Image (tube, rainbow, N blue to C red; front, side, top):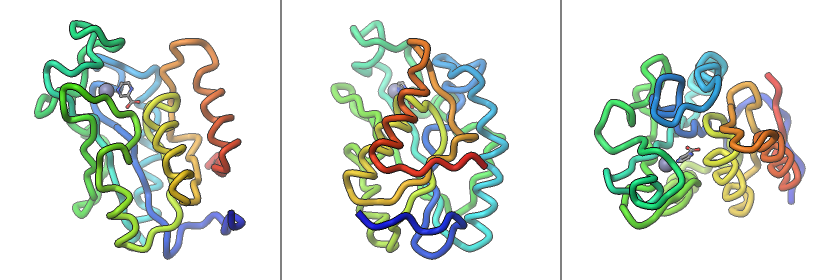
Length: 193
Ligand code: VGL
Ligand code: ZN
């Protein structure tokens, strides 16, 4: 594993915004506590990357109405992020650039996927753009952010976790903190800006 490069974003870097969708923010059907607090820091990071014309990716949970993760289907979550509904939309306060790369995941009934890499072309797109390091934030720290970061590390990307731009479900107290510790243990650098 190579040493982490210095922090300021530059060539070879990209931003991965994980699931900043209405259903995951306060007022949504699977609201992450204080999830709306990620928007301001994330907008600042979007500005930093976009100022250098670096690529910005935004993943979205995009479930069919009978998705296997939903409680009526025997899953653990209330229905959320049903494709093409208002709850699945990116939060309108998020200042996504016009050329954002949208990554749609978990869009078949039988398969759940927390990672933005699972069943998507994200890795191929990043490779095509020569991306080696990902700045990652969004929701939820203990589910989709965690699994996306672990996959990114397995695939050999350097990862900078944007601590101010993540919030956790915390189904069990401490889940978010344990997720951050796990990401650190797998080599993610944690940025507190
Ligand atoms: C997520 C729970 C269910 C997430 C997605 O984006 O973290 N969490 N589906
Ligand atoms: Zn989901």
